[in-house]
Length: 191
Image 1 (spheres, rainbow, N blue to C red):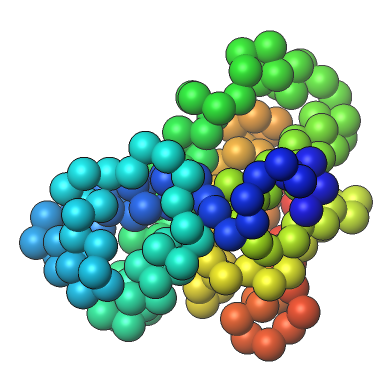
Image 2: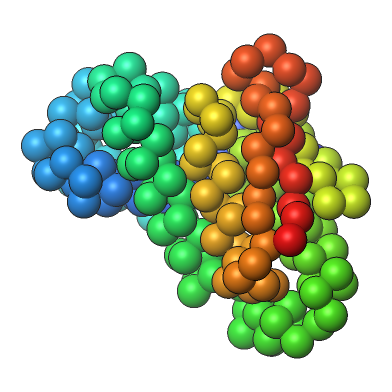
């Protein structure tokens, strides 16, 4: 993937797991979060959240289990919350202050293009071995092992990043999902 040749393929940022645990606990309580993590063999990660990059198979298993254990509307709400909180963490801790200022002060079109480029370059943090491409206002992730129905988590991450760093009126639309057999998860940036 562009910009990440030095990164081991198949790892993602720990917030994919940390924020999922927080979101399940927020919506359904600690017991539900523990049951989800224990059911996938990762209870230890709920009690002692990872601080380093993790194998993409861990959040992939947790995301899959979320949709198996809970009704779709509940799973979607939890995944959305986890995605929003993941983006909040990224904004607060991973984007340098000068970059945030530049994005907010740049003309909207330029800011959105710069943010899209940064997303593509750092996609391994939320797409693991998936391949991210940006074409104009479209962000695509191929072989997205972390996808879930509607790509709810990825959509929420992207939505929050664009809304907080570029413009609150920007809307991210999910157009296709790799999980449904299309070649890529496709997100369009509009507004």
